[in-house]
Image (cartoon, rainbow, N blue to C red; front, side, top):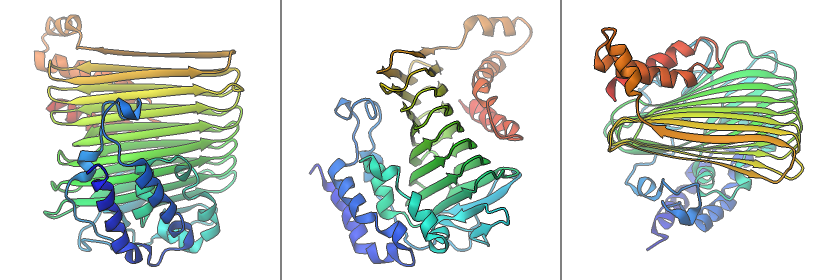
Length: 435
């Protein structure tokens, strides 16, 4: 039966609705019923052209249809969420629930960060003005499913003309102790006019159990704000992450996002940015390293809705034997978005005949005074470069790894958060060594 999966998930919610909503204010509970209708109407997408370019190479029904345990209260109280040794303010999560000793930090400067559930209780008006405003308007089944089930997540608020000194580090860890878990997590980031902040999001498996995390992120970047976000994904080979990010930029704002997907059974990242007012600038970069049995998919949609905006995208992928990578990106330029500058590039390497990468950059332009370009390459390691290095005494293994590391390093080198480049380089080097 085609809708059996949707019915099973709907029944799961209805039988636990009271527990899911308990203790949460209307700002998080009110959207659930409408989101449930959206979810059932849209349905979990399957692979194929019927869904257009978004799911042409990646279907989600199999991973969402697997058997998982779902907990609607914090689980594994004795397990800590492991954070990387990164400077900054840490917000640890385990299986979708905040594990910080102080769930919500409110600094004298007005900066607020920590648990979304706690923020929704303490600041219902602030959260209510923004929560689900972007994701809920899209008719997207995955985002709607997250809205139905989510109970907690990360909240960051930076008031007007305030700069956060050092990054805020959000860790989403998953741990099952022999159980396959389905979790839901959310991020709500609000940056007021003229503010500046840096965010690091670390998605990881903290064990070898299978799992699925359905994640949604909403980002509001007001006039003149400057925001930098780095995301890493390190799931084990039995776990999957399906995430959707919705961002809105106002006049003269700057948003730079770097996503580094290192491992996981199925990783799907759907990023949509709307440049809503003149002068907004966006940079979106990504790196995927897909090993044997891994499927990594980046989908981007950059909407130029106002004139005099700029966007730049650079995505690079490496797939080894038995690995799959997907990049599908669209740049949309509205009729009134004159003097747009938009550039998109996807470069990819295949390490064997059984490696697959699908790249589809797209331009959809309705204005006549623009500078836009896009391109994609899919190839193999340079035999000439390998030969050159071997002539200088470098082994074949090391020559191949050096070339791969240099290829990936051109994305990692764009890391916007100071002090994080070396950490990302070490992560990428360890993954490349295993490919």
